Length: 251
Image 1: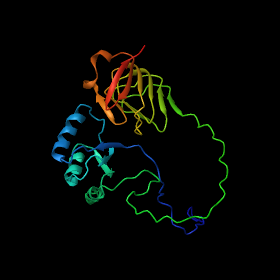
Image 2 (image 1 turned 90 degrees about the horizontal axis):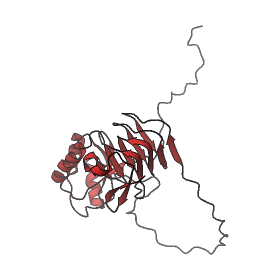
Image 3 (image 1 turned 90 degrees about the vertical axis):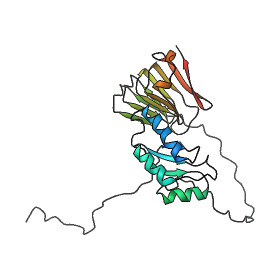
Image 4 (image 1 turned 180 degrees about the vertical axis):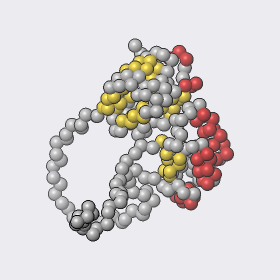
């Protein structure tokens, strides 16, 4: 008997599985359809934060364009030249979404959300039914917090999905920490910190020694050159004030 004389079922070997998953994506909100103006401005910003969006997948929001036309093939080519990977569009009118799809940018929707431009069915009178008394409200579960009890080193990325993030130690230059909620760093922040990644504008970043490459909250960010010199090396709280980041000293 040879080594391969084991019985087989005759069924094909499983080669893949498909599963639905949720991931946080950065969103590029187009405020103008003029691609020739958008791409150089993006290039200028990203050169100030090298590596922050390199090969990052992003969604393109069309909500602020109205009926303005966009050269989507040129936009896609320009973003890829900047090493940014557009994967689809969100919002905007149907005609713009159709044009984006023609350039390989499908419409993205949150999990469970249906298309909004579907004709609603006519209302039908329903028979009266007894409505049970509502159950007593249960307290919401406490928000989870992810704790990292060590330094985050260059090249590392830590993501706290659906929770706050606590780093007990420094975040070194070249490292990146991301949270859907707040970020607390009990040490020096020398790398990149992105709070409110799920578009939570109330999120905040706290660092005992503040000297970042980049900080961002709910999509609004500042690179090192845009941070007030007076807060460098100090204990700082970063928060949103309208459409601007504020840097408040503490301690």
